[in-house]
Length: 167
View 1 (cartoon, rainbow, N blue to C red):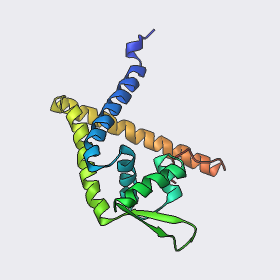
View 2: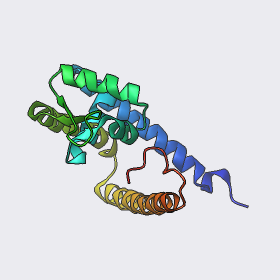
View 3: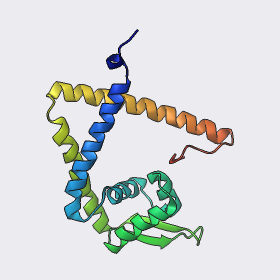
């Protein structure tokens, strides 16, 4: 019989605790920019989309309700970080994309978020960081493949995709 310490449960708990610590550190560093972690995340999603996103798609990718996405976008638009436009394909749909000012701010956001993570992991030696990075990439790749397979299976079966799935 295996002991509780040898199971994967403590790893998950510790991982979540460390992730929370990194988010809190990043949030403290984002505050002087006048950004919340939710706004920073929305900026990242918009930038990675590569094209303007419909508000509903942004909400799905952020895994929040559309009304909350509207509030986030309102705040970002008021600061000149994103712009709204009307879709030419569907005049009812509002599209959102980062402005040039928003892209510049995103570079600062990225540096802050990376710095917050680096501040935590620099406590490890180079070899330990390399091994941790290898293991996290392995898990990320396997879970992404599993999520994609599950998403495809659900779409094919007529069932809805998982919340936040991008397909």
